[in-house]
Length: 259
Image (cartoon, rainbow, N blue to C red; front, side, top):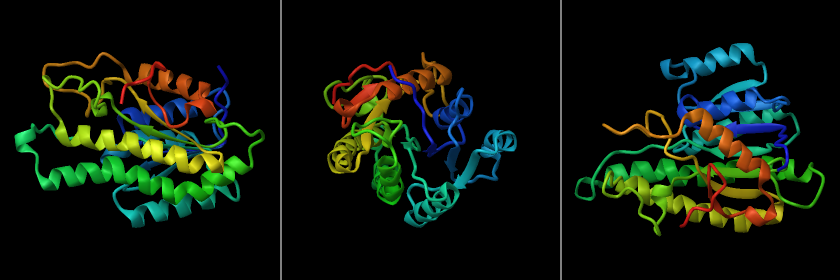
């Protein structure tokens, strides 16, 4: 396994749960990134207090207003990141922001499915488009011809509930809009891998496990995986990825997830 050494990283949905966990682990690395960008809807709000505390201690952490369903917000975020990078590229883009609503099939609505799909699927597509120039710059400035997360990469935080092959936990929770959005995210990851490979950018989908977060918790059920264990596992997986892994769907332990 190689060591994950990255110059810069942007995490969306970074104010809580898995996103915040990523930020904490990047800042705690023996050799932390020069720049850690934390994207969240309201950087000065109540839900971003933990991020604000971290930023007061870590000058390399920059909190950025970012709504991934809003193209204008994404464009502004890309300009802010580019300004901080000062001519260098963005090594790693982690599309983590996501939403879910606990509906059964008969309760799903046009409005809810549109909102969830826009955030969970269209958002990562728009982020990839907006940050492509900075990812390309990182790849061009990295030695070697292979692909890796230490060179330039897009990581889409996926879910095994988006697996058409397994239809996991259907009897426990249907989550139709969420499942559809994550299945579509898998296809987006594949499309990005095919298109961005020529630019030296690795693209992968990663299932973080059923994690103990606000979104992951369901009434009467405690998720088995802690945020810390999930992040440690995913970072270990990311450090081991190479050209053969681009376009794949893996879980936090490195196992291939059926599509």
